[in-house]
Image 1 (cartoon, helix red, strand yellow):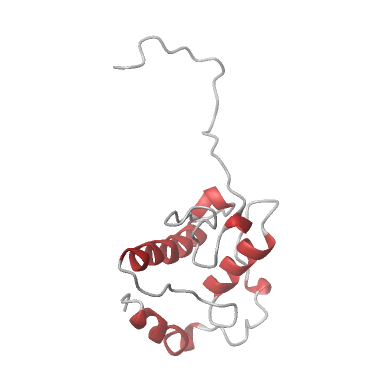
Image 2: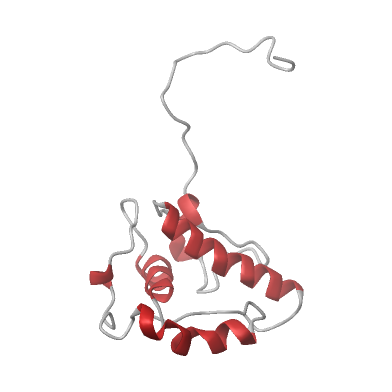
Length: 131
């Protein structure tokens, strides 16, 4: 393979290791507090699972675009949606193991239902230009 002619395998491995950033260094917009304009989501901030990565990527991506357009950020609080619980847990508490979003983590889980998601979140999505 071009560019790897002198490479030597030191130890065969099953997977690729990745770096980790303590999610407590993030704002609720998923922007790194010490580096304006850098937004993080997914495994690098300690989550595991496609659902968490998709949720975090949606918010981080929306906020990166909103910042470029000099518009207010999109945030979801704990009482507004499970994405808000996920983000709040990570940025305020951090994680010592791969984080998964369980409904039991949400204090407002009886109100956070799929049948009222449009009523809770559509206005936020519309204001951010996502709906």
